[in-house]
Amino acid sequence: MASQNEENLPALSSNAISLDDESQRPLQQDEVELGKRRYSRAWKYFKPVKVNGVSYGLCKYCDRRYKNARNCGTKYMLDHIPKCPNRPRDVQNEGDIGGSYFDQDVSRKQLAHAIILHEYPLSIVDHVGFRNFVASLQPMFKMVSRNTIKNDIMKFFDNLKSQTSKLLEKVTSRIAITTDMWTSNSNKKGFMAITGHFIDDSWRLQSHILRFAYVPAPHDKDALCGALVNCLFDWNLERKISTITVDNSSTNNAMIKTLLDEKLNKKDLLLTGRVFHVRSGRIERFEEAARLVHCSCNKKLEYDCPTRWNSTYLMLRTAIEYKEVFRKLSLTDTNYQSYPAE
Image 1 (cartoon, rainbow, N blue to C red):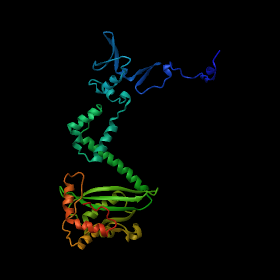
Image 2: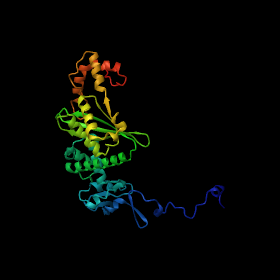
Image 3: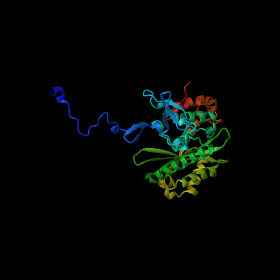
């Protein structure tokens, strides 16, 4: 007769899984199924052998053996497979050894993205130390040449450009343009950065760099206007512009006049172009502060650049001559929030 405790136990249903029924247990990552029995995935690449009565797993490709005892498991065999010098190519590309997953194409994309993100030189793929480091992380990864990674980066760029182009086509609002010139200290080459800003359908401000273009000297109104117009027409924005914001200089003023008079149709612009030109008053306010403290602005301010080792020194060397100007600016301009500490 069953006890009271036994009577209160719930009855097992007819389809309940017995602990001893190995075939009903969920398949684990490092297992394969052969008939009704489960085996470690390692046995796809090893065969069981006995040496002096001791069980071993023998690699099918290089004859390396690992002790196969119940308390040892197959971890060391699984770890050996990607490192085996004689493994066939199909095993190399299988990519699911030891429960992990490897995809050559995905890793190549990540390498290209890292180079873009951190501005690494393309030659990094030739550096012995870097190649050894990658091999230690994933021996199956085949390092690519600098030409191949360059092509990968260009494909990445073309894909992002295509996505941005489709996004801009769907924008129902007008797009504001900001542009600025930057001159490299090392080779004195000039570059124009052009950025588009707009409010999307979810009322979020979005900003996208549309072009970072080399502009050959001389940087007169025609050269600047040509670079800007090429970008606007390339992105089909000539009829969607709201404003263009530039630094307040005579060259930029002349460039905007050329845009309005010769390159763009005023009928396509907001208020026929009357609010098209937005002047940036940063330099004007700085020069006004310099005049108030009787300081001449003969030297152009330098920018700190993370990819130039001496740029911080060059920036500070020039800025320290305008120390009183920055102090005055912090007192007269409420928008100036970057006053350097002593």
